[in-house]
Image 1 (cartoon, rainbow, N blue to C red):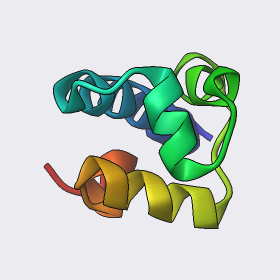
Image 2 (tube, helix red, strand yellow; image 1 turned 30 degrees about the horizontal axis):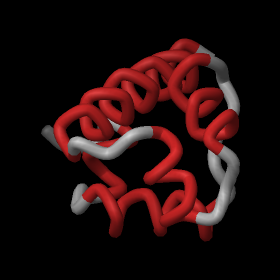
Image 3 (cartoon, rainbow, N blue to C red; image 1 turned 180 degrees about the horizontal axis):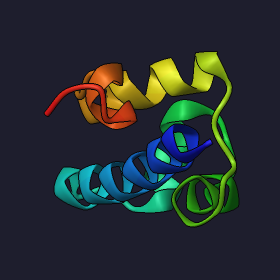
Image 4 (cartoon, rainbow, N blue to C red; image 1 turned 180 degrees about the vertical axis):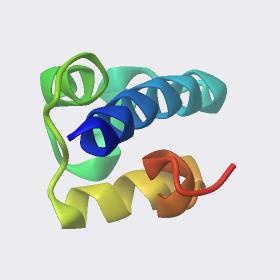
Length: 74
């Protein structure tokens, strides 16, 4: 369970960093990936994870790899 906990923490930290680097607001990102701004906030403040299709959109819009967001690569 420690591995899963670490994955959540890495995902939350990296997602928040990538959103900031993108210059997009949560509202703008939410519109691009088809979720509410509140849901975007939940992704990096809680253990709420996006669906696979939303996760793919996040990676594309933020121009990062899935491996990076999940902490599988640097």
